[in-house]
Length: 458
Image (tube, rainbow, N blue to C red; front, top):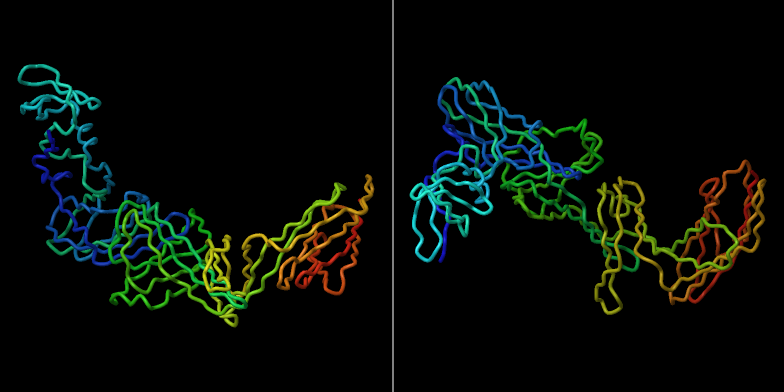
């Protein structure tokens, strides 16, 4: 037998006498931060009467930070006495729980159910004491209970409830600002590697799990490390222009030590939805590709293999067809084979990168470049350490490639001396007192061998 939840009198106000403000906003703006936080700014209107009354603002985010709510009223004088956030939403389970100890109407079990009145005693299982015969009925399903109305404490959507004194009959404007959790944005990049240049496409990815949909909203995203204790809330006037075409570029500007990205067209951010908006589309960026190994272990344990990371790097400058602040995000890299078919080749995490800085990404590990290191001299006592290392690198591929070996001297002595046999196809650069880098140009099927030495006096 099919059973249905019967909700008699469901049109009874769940909040008592009051004025419900229409949930359709005149204007909505959402500024999303990349720490699971958003600043919401809405404008609504409602017709009100003079006097003391309850204003019900339905449809706020269920993740609202109530201490951040800033309501402003215009069109009439308003004296605000109190504010409540109601979030006890209606569901079958909550209706049952709220009706325990109350009089209800219910259908008995069986093929020919009868309608009776009684007192709901418990919810799991649903047990009702009948007024007709005094018996206890354990119902097969909570859907056999008939509810006479909505309990005063329950609502259909999360709402702010204000108790206010209004000085005249008027169309009242409400300008509401608040912070909400559970809205986040991140950058997702697609990088197309070509033989000498690359194309970079960036997507703003917004995830909305705040419990509400923001219809036709102006969207802004702020990149940077936010300190919530001194959160710079972004109050701005609304722009009354119509939605702009999708082809217009996302506008970026510096803002209070952060970077602000303005979406130049309106979008609807639906609850439990992920939205992506293209904000970077750069082509023809010159890049350098090389292999890199790091050696920071100098113990006399024979021959050890060297693994070379496949590095792609470019300068983020306008002269290099880039020159835009790059928010932190995941970069997924693709490349075409000789037949023109595109393949995924790896991904890396990009940190917040300002304009004019260098971007360095690790694609993966080079397959055709192999190497070894061997400790050929090792003398150590309490006063000094003297180490000689021999490196050999081989390119088994058909294309020339540049590789780098970074040597990190594990020393904290009073004096460090170094030397090496790096020359010709090899160049040495001192990065710091403890770090030096060797760059080797390898020909196809070529190899290179050299030694390094360091002595540390303690």
